[in-house]
Length: 198
Image 1: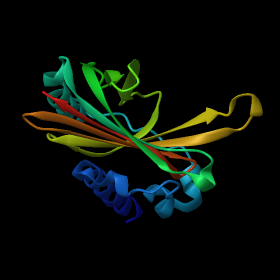
Image 2: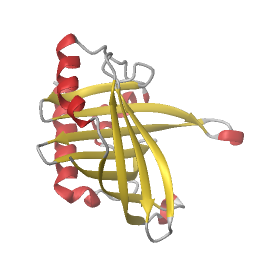
Image 3: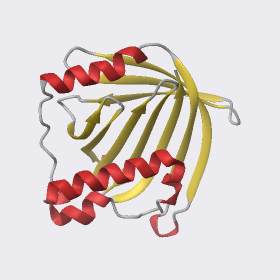
């Protein structure tokens, strides 16, 4: 029952995000997973190997996307310090190249252009990699929902922080949508919504 509630919650969040309502998530808002899991939230999920059917479906989704796509990304970032955090929203141009590998791994290389600041940056998204702790919570011919967690060190100050990302990818005849919502230690920190034209 607990896992079922988790799946429903994640799918709901993803659908809300792709309905252009992800801006409704406030800075420092709790992750839906932390609300459900409590103290267990800070445990790293065990990645489950993709089945043959999963790999076939992932290949069906991503193989046709192996060409350069262009579009826009809306980035929402919470400023510091935490108790005074405000959302900063920026829209940028983006070009994306998708690579699918036979083991099921998908990488998306992104070139992001900030027209106002006249800068470009490179980003890489990786999904279904066995070295990254993740769970596939929804997989259909129209899209996929993945939640991943990673612990990152705090540099010279020592210690670490937990980064959780909920990613929803939806594909149709005309567009490839990617929404990534990131939580730091269980609280909303930023989101990125890519809209790419096929």
